[in-house]
Structures are given as structure tokens and as C-alpha cells.
Length: 139
Image (cartoon, rainbow, N blue to C red; front, side, top):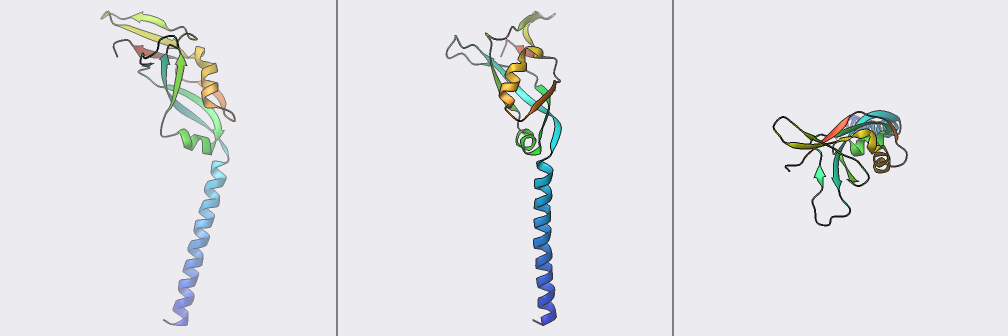
């Protein structure tokens, strides 16, 4: 191998190391900034007084607009977090539709304290996007 070839290989190697280092620094910089994002939550309700009863989960997802660091958003972006709520603290509304099927709705305004507790510190809740959650009693 000639000296010119060795120098070229060394320069290519140094360039690739610098490129990987620059890309890593760029990613870390971007993830430390704050962003607004709509986080999805799967909401299930249970009763603390009945043991062994399966929690009832909402048929739709709860979307909450938050402002948080990129690390937090990346952590929760692809898999919705579970928000488990005690039914005794909330007042669901019973609705019967035209087919005489019973559903329960839960106004999301009642969930603000539970949402803040589930989200944790360092995250600001800007708004709750979903107006109400629907629970199907046939499940």
C-alpha cells in the first residue's frame, strides 16, 4: 500500500469520526430543547373498593398538549402511557344511545389532577385536547 493511499484512508477515517461526533452533539442539543407535543394517553378506570374486577378502559385516547424537553417527548412518543384512575374520585356520566346500549362518558376537565400526577415534574400541561372519554359497558 502506498503512502498516498494510507493518508487517504486515514483522512476518510478521521472525517467519519468527526461526522459521528458532530451528529451526536447535534442530536443531544436538539433533545435538550423544549417542544410542544400532543401526548396520547390510554385511560382506564377502576374501583378501589372492588377487588378482582377488571378496569374499564376508554374506547378513545386522551390527548394532552404538553411542553417538555425532547428527551421526555421521545420517551413517550411511540407508546401511549397508561393513566389509571380511581372511579370514586371521578363522576362518569351514563349515556344510553338509540340502540339502548349504555356507555359512560368522563369529562376530561375532571382529570387534570390525575394527568399532572401521571405526567410528572418538568412537564407543563398546556391543554387537554380530548373533550370527553367514552367507556363501553359491554366490554
